[in-house]
Every structure is written in C-alpha cells, then in structure tokens.
Image (cartoon, rainbow, N blue to C red; front, side, top):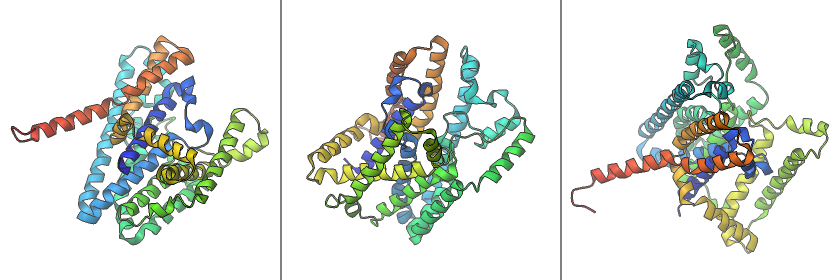
Length: 397
C-alpha cells in the first residue's frame, strides 16, 4: 500500500467523523465514539493538514517537472471548481428549504440572513464572507488553493523556510488579535449595507492556514526527497514519540477533567484563554503537533519496534486507514465534504420533521448516513471508468 493511499484513508476517516460530529449538533450517543473526546485534535484539523500535505506532494513534482504555469492553472481550476460547488450547494439548500415542509423553521439558525434573498446578503455569500453553518472548510480551502501555487513555487525553489516563517508569523498575528480591527471595520461596513449583516464563518482562515501551508511545504520537501522520513520517524529513537505521547496524555487529562467537572472554574478560565477553536489557538496547535507526530511514528516506525503493543497498534491503525471505503472517500474528499453538508441538513430535517428520535434513533440515522457519504465518490469513480472504457480501442480487454 502506498503512502498516498494511506493518506487518502486518513482523509476518509476524518470525513466520516466530521459527518458524525455535525449531525444533530452532536446531541446523540454516536458522537462520543471519536478521538476528539480525548483531547483537542478534531477531524477538521486533520483534514486540512492532510489536504495541504497532498497538494504539496502532488503538485511539487509537477512544478519541478513542468514549471510553474501548468500546475498553477490546475490548482486554480480546482479552486474555481470548488467555488462553483460551494455556490451550488448554497443554492440547493435554499431550494430545499422552500420545498421541504418545516425546513424553514428547522434550518433557520443555520442559514442566517440568506433566506431573505437580499442583494447584499447574496453578494456577501457569493464572496464567501457570509457562510451557512457547516460549509466551513470549503471556503477556506478555496482561499488556500488560490495562494498555494506561488507559495509552493517558492518552497520548491529554496524558500521553504521563508514560507514556513511567514505562515507562523501570520498565525501568531491572529493569536494577538491583529485582525480584529479590520474584522470590526468590515462588520461595520456590512451592517451599514444591510442591517444585521456581518462576517459569518466557523474558522479564521488566516489562523488555520498554518495547518495547510506547513503541511504543503512538508509535502513538497518530501516529494523532492529533502525530508528524511526514516530519520524523523526512526524506530531506534522512540524518545520524540514518548514526549509526544506524554503531551497527548496531558491534554487528554485536561479534556476529561472538563468533561467531568473535576477542575475549579478559575483554572478552566485560565485554560480557555489558550483554547479558541475558531482561531486555532495554542492548545489546539500543540495538541495537534504531538498527536500527528505520535500517529506518524506508530504507523511508520511501529512495525519495526521491539514493543509488541506498539506493533499491534501500528497494525491496527494501518488496517483502519487502508480500508477501501475510507480510501474511496479520501480520493474524492472535497466533493464528499460538500455532499456531507447536504446529508447533515437532510438528516436534521428528518429529525425535526418526524422526530426528535432520541439518542438511539439519531445514532441509527448517523450509521445509515455513513455509507451514503460515498455517493459522490462512487459516481466519480463510475464516470472515470466509463470514460476509460469508451476511450479503449475496439476489441481490447
């Protein structure tokens, strides 16, 4: 199994659990079966990171071989395609809102001002400034893909450190609130344009970009043979993995302490200063780096260690992340992500119209939605196979 296939499986894994997390606002039993319940690494973070890693790995080779222009056009074409998917998804949800009985009330909070049809609101949505709930990753991914070609070109031409430094500085600026004055100014202007209109997004893309562009640079260096994976993930040097495991356990204890109210409020308030999901703050960054390294070490170095539990963990993770279903989802991850948004809206409508079903009923719906998640991936694979069959010479097998 190639490492790209393994990364596809990982992306598929994150897609499944993003679906589970988003269904019913997480108010059902199935949502508890998630690694995020034991720390501060969530599926969206892993998905963004892996997407950046694959962009770097795949397009760095193409740029090194064919120059800047061709691969850049491919990336920008991909970004435009995803933009059309995003706008089409918004239109589809609004159409369904008008068709499905009760959808106006059920989806009211998720769509905000969009159902008004006011020109300022629609233009803001078209500019991806005003996003319905759960669209999240698509708009920021489009932004990253627009910037990716230039930064990737710099990375493969000896400016990788500069790209990483710029990404880190931008993340730090977001943590210090450098963007707040600008955001407040934009909100004020939008409010003057239309009452109640503001920026509406789940994530700050200028903070979350550290995941995508750090991964993109790593992917580019990996593709160029400038990253010695064997040395970084050396089975003879378990020390960094042990440190990462300690960090992961540390944050898991904090998460459990919050879940069961085992810490005083004054400590919780101090912790929350560094725990801002929208801004991808320090708690999330440190926890992600530790868990990402630990999982990578177990997958790559684990099979060669002397520790039987580590070898067993490596085998279990490899089996999980190479499941054909997860790899299928991962190969078409962004289209699947767009489809998952529609699934979440439809499942919530079913629950609101004919329910609520309770935690067991919602869990059953969630389990039924998992195989449906593959619908766009199956369709794209079928179309690809059909084109290949039509292009094959007559009489060939």
